[in-house]
Each structure stands twice: as C-alpha cells, then as structure tokens.
Length: 103
Picture 1: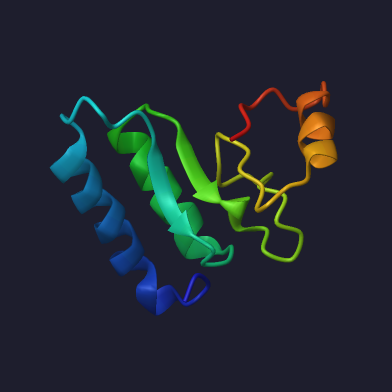
Picture 2: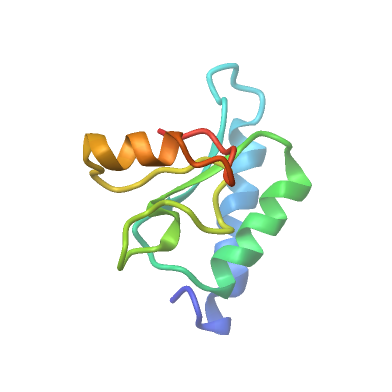
C-alpha cells in the first residue's frame, strides 16, 4: 500500500486527523508514521503533510528499512533500529555523519 497511489489520500488523511486530534496534548513529544509498513511514496507524502502541520520530530519504526531494520532513512528524524545489539547501538552513537537521536 505504501506505493499504491490509490492509497495516498488515506495516508495523508490519517496523519492530518492524528495531528488535529492530538497536537494540543502536552504528552505528545513526537509523531509516528506507523510501524513496519515498508517504505514508499505514500509515507513520504504523509511525512511531508505532517511536517507542514507541526514541527515536532517524526519517527517511524525501522525507518521503513525493513530488510536491514536500521531505522536510518529519510522518513524519520529519529533513528529507531529494530532490535539492535549493544554493538550496533554503540556504532550508531559513534557515527559522526548522522546526528539524529537514537531510540
């Protein structure tokens, strides 16, 4: 579905409704595009819409990089690898080319 243009409006509508509903809750510190749904144009459009609506960081479990689970893609402001080892987290923390937070 992430690359099916027939679903673009649904993806954008979902994040729009989420932001409109939750943006004034003080516990909302970041937004999520979802969890393990792949990577494609509809999530890119949803991210662009979300960014226009609010300035809080955006995360997306695995970053849409399911094959590697690295959490390091253009979809996320926060690196969120799937089940990393301690060594992988240390390597991410020592990467001077990427200054995004890691969770």
